[in-house]
Every structure is written in C-alpha cells, then in structure tokens.
Length: 178
Image 1 (tube, rainbow, N blue to C red):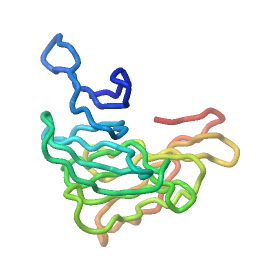
Image 2 (image 1 turned 30 degrees about the horizontal axis):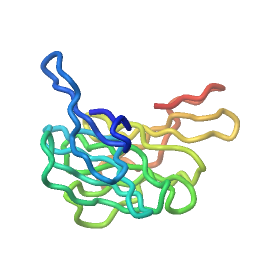
Image 3 (image 1 turned 30 degrees about the vertical axis):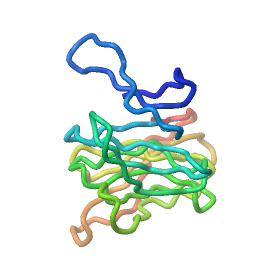
Image 4 (image 1 turned 45 degrees about the vertical axis):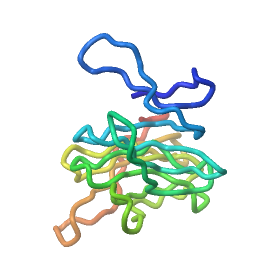
C-alpha cells in the first residue's frame, strides 16, 4: 500500500503483489488517510486518518474495504505510522498528546486501554519497528548532543527476569532514524 493525493484527497492505494499491475484506490473517503500498514496475516490494515479536527488510528479490513473501527483519537498532529505486533494482536504508535512524543500500544481489536510503553517527552521522535519475536521495540528520539538517535526498549513479559529500561542502540554525530 502507499498514499497519494492524485484524487485531490490523501488516500491509500494498493498494488497487486504477484506481478505487474496498476495501483487501485483502496477506498475514496472525505478523510485524509495515510501510513497504511498491513497486518501480519494480511487481513487488516492500520492507518492514520484525519477528520473533523481529530487524528485517528483506524483498523480497516483488507484487501477490500468494509469493516472500519477507531483504535485511538488525538488532536492533530499527533500520531505516527502505526505498527503491528508480530502476532497481530497489538498496534504500536507514537503520539504527542502529552506535549512531547511518547510511544503507546493498544489492542488491535480497539478494546481496552492504551499502554504508555516509552516516555520520551521530546519534540520529535517516533516508534520505528517491533522485533520479529516481539521482545524489542526500536525507536528514535533526539539526543542532547547527537541529533536523532536509535534506542531499543525491551518488552519482556513482567516477571520474566528483565526490566523494560530503554537502551541506546546507535548514538553518533549523525541523525540516525527509520
């Protein structure tokens, strides 16, 4: 999937996987929809949408539209690209709802409370990826002397002998990101 404003509105498009094919508009809506991410089982898409002055994290049926529900709502500009957990049960995202960017997770079903995983409190920064085994989250945040740095946060189950204290992964004079 990719995003384009070729229809006069920012929408999500899909491209066939098995070879050459023309991009197809996923769904035409009045909302501004970006950053589509396909679930591990290929049946769902998480994306950011903006409508009525709010930024929404939504889950949509895939590859065909039909089912749509909201997972999180923030005042804009608040949410980053959503990321699926490896098992497809949770969504990871960044938000600046507290004044600085932090990393959250929530059930992909949309139920339950959001969980604050990483408190960055910075003007920039975002979750970047989830490890395949679900045990680590890679994120970027600015360092006081080094620009954007990459950090990892362990996600070991509570009581499994590990704490969740984030660790620097790559800090250099350059901007490490994505």
